[in-house]
Length: 175
Figure 1 (cartoon, one colour):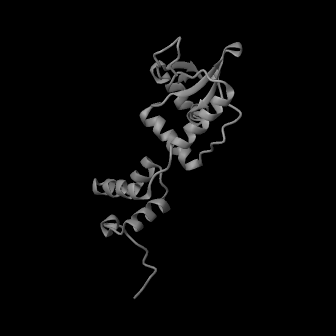
Figure 2 (cartoon, one colour; figure 1 turned 90 degrees about the horizontal axis):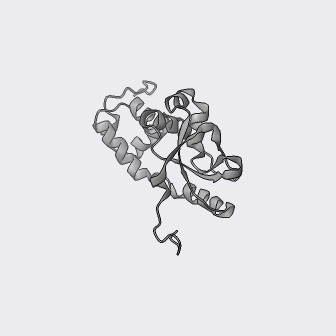
Figure 3 (tube, one colour; figure 1 turned 180 degrees about the vertical axis):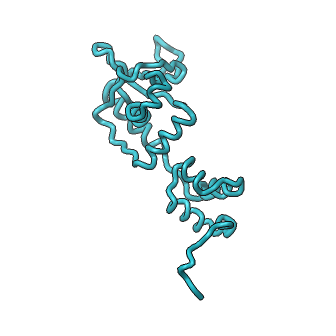
């Protein structure tokens, strides 16, 4: 925040620093958990797009370590995927905030909750548009992180028969 000694505030995102993975650690207070399908999607995102958002950290000078405030799951992707670690040469993009522990905890929660959720109507629209563009169910599931049941539900809720065109169905029913 601007103060009498620093009247111009500069957002941390303008000072991204590559930090060796080994100098970063998780915090002990993050309540966020990401389910396996979303972690798979996060891996796909980082694999295909690279790191597009830095890890938010607090620098602990006496330990020469960066403690994560936000971005734990992006950190986990590098920890668990050697291909990502090697491609990134063991470096994670980091921005540093200088806040006391209570403000860091609040920041973690704000970051987690600000991400929100996807509206069903908007997801239906996206799926419909992807199908109209000729994308297969497999492509959609892989690239936007859906399983077959979720994709089917979105198609059903849309009520558009065109979303089921050229699909083979079970012959278990007879007339």
